[in-house]
Amino acid sequence: QRIEALRRLREEHRRRALDDAVEKLRAVVYELSRWSADPEITGSEDKYRRLEREARTQAALAVRLAQGDDDLGRIVEALGDQAELVRCGRELRPLRERLGIEEPSASEGVAEPEEDDATLDVTPVDEAAETWAEEWPPRILDVEGAGEGERILIVGGLPDERRRELVRRFFGWREVEWVESYRDRQADFKTLRHRIAEGRFDRVIILARFCGHDVSQSLIPACRRHAVSCHVHPRAVSIPAIAQMVYGA
Image (tube, rainbow, N blue to C red; front, top):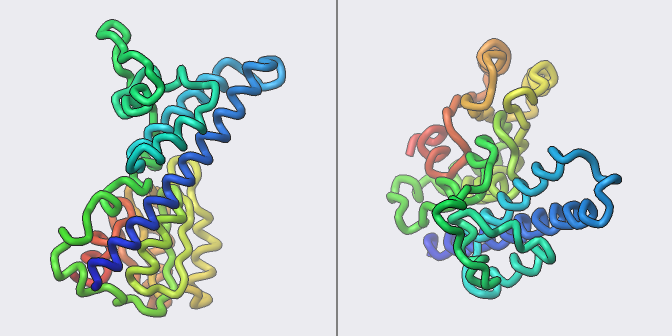
């Protein structure tokens, strides 16, 4: 019964992630179409190249999430008149087959979509989404609901709403706030320290890979001072990782 519930949760997660990728692709294609209509009003050539890369990235993500012809049809429809975007890239091969585009020759290469490292770590297709629930050991499944009613703060990386909701529902958390902190976009640690002092959170999870040294100099001491559980995790958010790191699975 628990396995079936997790399967349903994963399928809901996949559908929402696919919807999001398709809508983002549609938005970028719209910008590219505006450029084609009137290049003067849309900016520099560099912006155009960035839009192309973003479109390929969202298309590749959508293909990974697609299950069946209907899903692929939605992606093709979102591409509109920008089908040339999928001419290269191994992950885009299903779209080329659907569109009748020939595979690139060896001389053309098979350049992959350029993706941001932080985004890859929090997208719905990494560790948590690719690990089938039935493959998780019993010790992972045994901590389902272990955080019932807890208020959680996650700091680090680029927040992902679907992943946030996935872990919230599995562990039974009452609230989860995920604060962005990555490269030059570091979190406002002073404000977070105040909120920890005010008792707003029961646990703080820090994704160390994406946070600077300010974390150890501010958030961790603040958690200790105010008796808030604090966990430093080197990777992205996933159910198995949190089950082991936070709840000792």
